[in-house]
Length: 409
View 1 (spheres, helix red, strand yellow):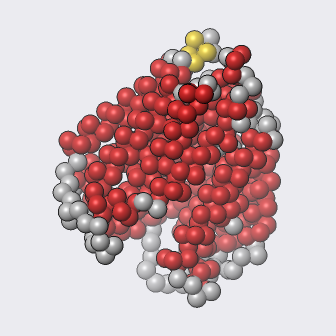
View 2 (cartoon, helix red, strand yellow):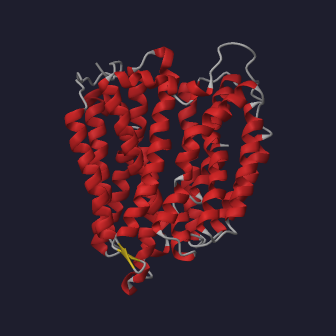
């Protein structure tokens, strides 16, 4: 289930921008609008669909319906060449897909519990198959030379249909009869807005949103950037141009490695230093993109950019979630996590997609993009965030190397 869940996303998430720019002739702003659908959907749909799965339909049935909608929307998107219609169809896909991320976790936890297995120890190695699925999809699309083709969308649609059918064979997750009711307000994290009265938490959530925008930038324009080296004859047949998604998949491999280091770094340095490391890693990610190219030395810079992505993503996204878990009152812990995800994958993703599209267009002349300047602008943005965060986020940490030590004081 988890392999297919993220295979679907990996089949188009990092390559659709290249298809829209190079094959369909979309502007950067058009691409940004299409990618903003993920942020719009993340604001509302996970909470609403979660309530349906809790109260009326078993989670695995809701999951199947969502992926049936995804399959139809992705297949429709493959036939579209107009930016406006592409936006609405991909919004329909995002509205159905974003809730399935949480639903897949719900089904996993319930299935493990039904089998008498401990979720804490057994879920992480199972979740790794999601990342493997994402990488496998990127390699499939790249090796089959579908990165600039609508066939990537048909592959994603086929995987969605297969997952919808497979999910019908999963254990039925019974709906909740009575008990504590969680409203959509709670699921969206809106009742956790009380945390904004705490200046430290207010600053943390604000920067979570701003870093969410950074993440969206690299998802949207990393692949189109690598494809653009085909304009230079000496690079046209290089590995970077021929198989950019395979190179980008090193980012996901790095992510798997860095996630294992989070407990040590949080205990030793605390959330402030860890998030600063993430911001510095984002600066390096973009700066290395700015000066990287398919030449021997330039390729090393590109490869290093992929490696630092693991630190940039994990030390902000995963560590931030752990920090929220440690800091907030247990009565609003779930809502606080919802608020964190809303700020990162909702508002942050939307803002990042829209603004990055305009930045790319601003530094483009007759369709030729000044990628060096574009990436340096993004690197400068991440650097400014790091400086402001350093002085505005008040946090005191007592370092410890003991496994049993708390993450924060």
